[in-house]
Image (cartoon, rainbow, N blue to C red; front, top):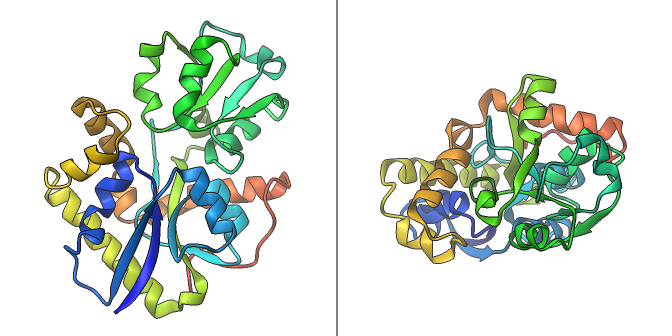
Length: 275
């Protein structure tokens, strides 16, 4: 049985959907060796083609299309789930270009959305996403671009929301905000990619049908251990698009096309999915 290297983040939405797959609850032609890293690390590993299958930001996918294809299952996109810009106090949006803004990585979709929202914001400081809120609270930076469970916990740090970039994207395009997806190396071949996609879909179906069984695994890696936060995280980022991206692919294509036109990602002739 072929072993596939599989990268995903320790965030509850990822551990939830991959639980059944890596715990061999799903029958298939492959075994999986999991590697849990934050999404920006996974983005960088994929650039080096170090992983067979991996979660990445859709921003990173724009740089990876020649070597990786998107799976139809496993994506994180939707409405009301985008990254936020937060600060200690209200700052006029027009002044953000003069402020230092902490971001969770140059290849994150959050940073791409920030660039689309205001190309003038150049004073960025890159740091791990789980350090951003504390850094803003301490005044190390003027504002922070937060993702994942930060969406639910920033008030506890005494912070206020300046901009919801997901809401902005939805108003601008009418489309759900595309955050990240699961990629497979094209050189695995069509048959293998399709089998991986099938097994992942089964893993997500298992998670939906048995939501409590993965709880211990999810909590083992979650940075926020509060059950309510974990449940909110999963319900926000795991939805029908995760099971099957369907017409949500229009949002991904719109994001990539816009980034291409602004020369923020390289052009590619490769199809999004494997043919």
